[in-house]
Length: 570
Image (cartoon, rainbow, N blue to C red; front, side, top):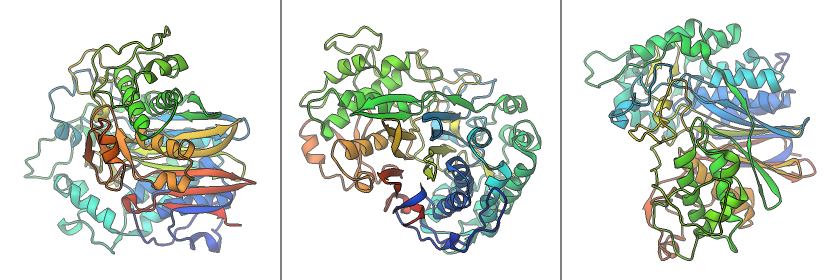
């Protein structure tokens, strides 16, 4: 979102005063320099991360600080009551490690809990709210890899929430688009519809209740949410949403209990990995489908004698067919087989001069691969996912790198603010399949994590980082990340051009294309069927250019443009 921001106070591990240069940066989509870099959708978040890096914090410290600020300035995309996935390159060990902060279903949820409920009704309800994972993942990341305390990392966000930011057109539009459901909850209307309407463009928006919540979390730690008073208030809100008197909306109560919060854990997971043109591409394993599906598509592309946009769309469709059939919590086929070269050859041999009829059936990653077997079985459609979420990348002076997706699912989550706390709840459980297929790997269940499409990605060359990238966008996250990688490494674009280029997203059905996607007629002649979409994703990335120089890249225009900053320009 495009904003003008009020100054913030950043902090160091010793809580020192920020340098005078901390607030001089302007919002630009590309920055090159040394000593560390960041790209987010939001100038205030990028400035918070850069301030942490300038004052001795590392990439994980900066990522958590930026993520907390995004909970203030991008509250309809992310927040501490949501979840996410963090991919981390550890320069000391040379390893890529990941944190799974995905929300979980309550223990009372069953495979039929969502069955028969209209999707939009499920979104705006307590029933859609998963057990939040963001705060647990922040604490785990800081404890395992960071140098700041949670209290220190939250300080920039507290300042932004207290002092406020200037409302821009994007924030106004998102609020207006959700006004009908926001007004149906007393706490949400009070915060986001002052005087009964969205805050006007140019006004200063403050969230003092969220500032107080962050401040108390800094004092008390995550246990205040995972079993303490804040957790009790979240459960009460989920089970008895604060519906505005006279509202006719059917708001279903949720199944969350305090014991679900007490039992929640963010998890360390091994990343996915595929080798691609001599590079090592690392991503997020299930319950995210991002790393596996991007990786399978890259493997398929490597089986092709020539790679163009036709092959990109076909590889996407084939990988999505397998994603929908096999990936969930847990996946029902081994990830190592889905990412095997033998399976990629089986799938890649189906790509011809014209588009395959969609939807294509899934393959059979059974470990026994034939030259070109016909696909069998039924295709499972790609479930609806919200277009929101956010992504950020950070690199520090030591060479550590973070790619981090965080989300509350739909734009505005479930639409319900926890009274007195300034925190919007997630609707992450609508990422589950609603049924009734008994064989769907993504049906809800007690303690399960809904399948995600988030695909924070780090690329290494002989063990050293060369690129990191990710995006929001629901299921289109996978195709956006894939297309950026194809643009960069198959078509030879530089990273800013690879990220800014018009996009098309084929997910085993109609192909969504942005207005500027000029190859539509050529691809339609080969059998691809298109539909229009205004924009796809809001990516952020960075690339190491050599001799210590880093290029940070954000969107030039999508969602109002993003913010790229470096620690030192020279």
